[in-house]
Image (tube, rainbow, N blue to C red; front, side, top):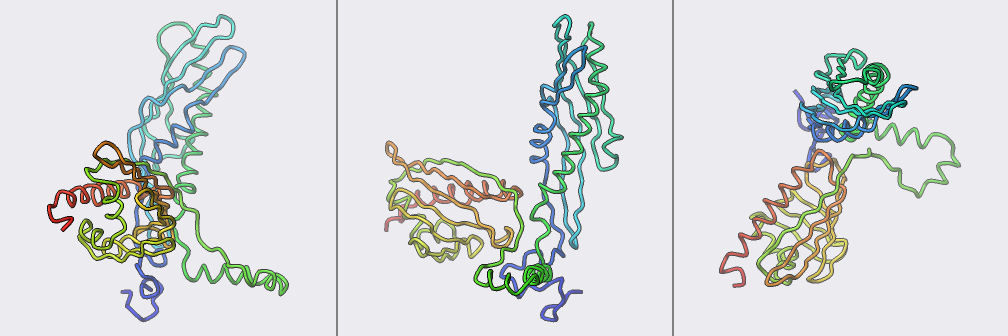
Amino acid sequence: MAKWGQGDPRWIVEEREDGTNVNNWHWTERDATSWSKGKLRELLVGITVENEAGHCEVSELKQVEGEASCSSRKGKLIFFYEWNIKLGWKGTLTESGVKHKGLIEIPNLSEENEVDDTEVNVSKKKGDGDILKDLMKTAGTAKVREALGDYLKALKTEFTTGMILPTKALSTQELTVKRKPSENTLQAHASSPVALGVRIPTVALHMTELFDTTVEQLYGIFTVKDLVQKFSKAPAVLEAEKGGKFQMFDGNITGEYLELLKNSKIVMKWRCRNWPEEHYATVALNFVPTLGQTELQLDCKGVPVCKEENMKFCWQKQHFEEIKGLLRLPTLNG
């Protein structure tokens, strides 16, 4: 069993403030379902094949049912995916210009089968044009399998970026390698910080909410410590000035104020405790006065893909709804 304070590399939490997945030892899981649906659409729709008889194109993603996920344990990635996919295709005969439509069905894309062995069924609506169906069954099927292979490559590289975090030992090795080449290289870069880390796939969020209050009062709820503690129901630390730090929800949210335009706009570096270490999103809050209300416009860039839904929940439930509850209190201005 890993023991505290005895140098066990599996659990060096005292060297990290949050102790999150130290040295990649603990089990973590990332849901790849939503990302996969978008990636499959991107790779499959638009596939084209042609010969002297005609031209065919995958025109739409009619159905994509299933799920995908990636888990990390002891520095190893484990993938699970199972998909039932239906595509629509259309084709045009060169000689007559007659158009035909059909389906491509992939009933079981999963880790149990190699991509080259994945079943791909091509069908066409009744009528002439079987030559187009044959084109899709040969060249079209080959291109569809190629796209499925590209999806799996992306799942195992693009999507998983950031799941295996650099360990302390790896960081030391990288530093050693970068400092070895020559004394001149060392002197040239002695004052430059060495960038260590990984690229994390991110998304942007935009949310708006109406509040029955003035811009002055709503702005204050985000910049006055007492008001922040009231709506968050937890201790907070705030330095509401450019470059000032903040901690909210008992330290689970931390960051820095990048810009404050009184009663108009707040821009922050913002992160949750369970995000990859040293990764911050940029959150911009715009306070727009409307008739008897204030519209809060939230724009957030740099949210880790795997934390998108958590981020939406955090703002909708833990910020917006709690602030509305606070505004209903008769003692708010007391």
